[in-house]
Image (cartoon, rainbow, N blue to C red):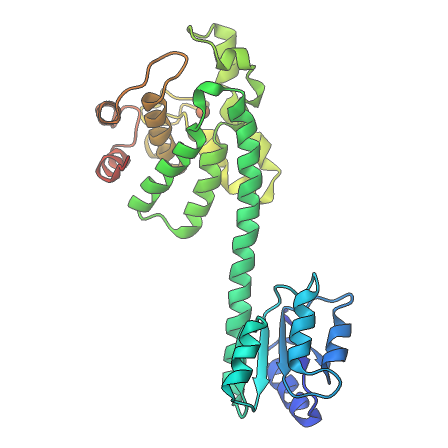
Length: 315
Ligand SMILES: [Fe+2]
């Protein structure tokens, strides 16, 4: 339930607004002036502040200024209620970082709409911040793996970009694209178990080395199992070496039994491997790699996805 700190010196108006917002399911912490409102911040963090401007003791401007200096108040959305419509007031409030302004007299619906839109906006911003913080951590983790294998420098970033382009071209939903980004960055995280001398080997791998290498999708998937916000990326990690004809690993799945996350990543991962220098081959030109992908449509790769990849490829 969203907590709203409501600051209003007019007892009747305070009561009316409190009733309107409580009827909409919000939890209200009432305060009769800025000082009282500020005291609320020790130990509490409201989701929104709705405040009058003209109040005794500490007015709305002072309150806003003080709240913006508190560690738990910097980002709290702040909505002013005021009868004063002078331009100077509005611009002063904006300079202090107010998020919205509601002029008295307002009706109940206007108030509820303004409150809801500020809270929705805040939720979106928070979600975005959390997601990008997670992404930064994941990139750091993936860079550790990439750093052990100098031949693949930049591989993760390119795979991420190619995967995003292909997912957009395939019209995947935004929620899926968010997960795809994590999956593309983490797909080889299981290579942590492969010694770097094996990763850097220029000749063919011996049987034991190959066995170890083939475990990286399973190992990576297990690493993500216990992490709530990364679990959804497991199909990318687990299935990016499954081939359309069933000859891939770890499970030898074929056709549409391979989750589409794995089918998508298989194409862009192979494309990037072909177009960059690796210990075991010199890089190909993009147009030759595209031709190679095309030749393997229906063999290694999902034929429909290959068509979209070729149509939408941008260097
Ligand atoms: Fe891999």
